[in-house]
Image (cartoon, rainbow, N blue to C red; front, top):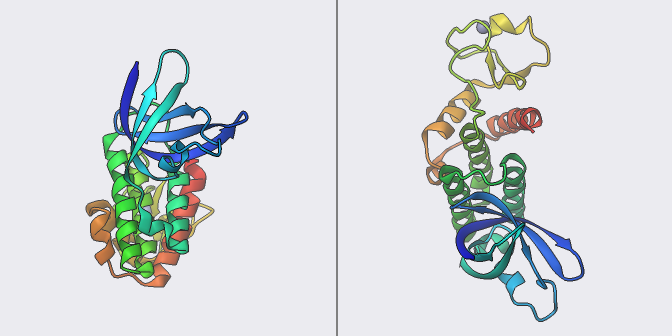
Length: 238
Ligand SMILES: [Zn+2]
């Protein structure tokens, strides 16, 4: 049987003499792993349609075991991203984290749309040469991805005492995935300071689409703070 999927290429790995195994996040079936036979031969055209983070329609023959790719039609190669080295690195970084955190054959249309929307936003920022906007969009993508995967960061109430988080000295606890107020912070170790502005930005991430985050005005200081927070959070999730 041959099946048609709409998918985003997450990763590829060489196997055998001329073959490759691809990880693809599909709309129809979540992340799948499939074999492309002979794809590394000099005259093989298929490889060009299966570059990392390309959005494509992919035809897969499947009977027993791993499916085999029989063809691919590129829907969007996100060509502008590929012309800009720093934005290209963002795309690879985001897709790598996405690949690491998603499970195989776990259909999730929201996550598919989130990744697609992130790549479209990057592509348009690359076209407009707005590299300075990519960092907030990248962070927003990760916060939204974590939320969708069931790791939403608790930012409204203190994890320990339950009181409303106010402006001032608050701390992030990666183990519990949330914020601890100043009063409770003396009792728990391994604290990371959270700027009040960072909390506001996280709230904006949760309430807005990826595409609208390009309008967000941010300070580098807050972005750096958010990078530390997401880095620590990611260590715990992974
Ligand atoms: Zn507290």
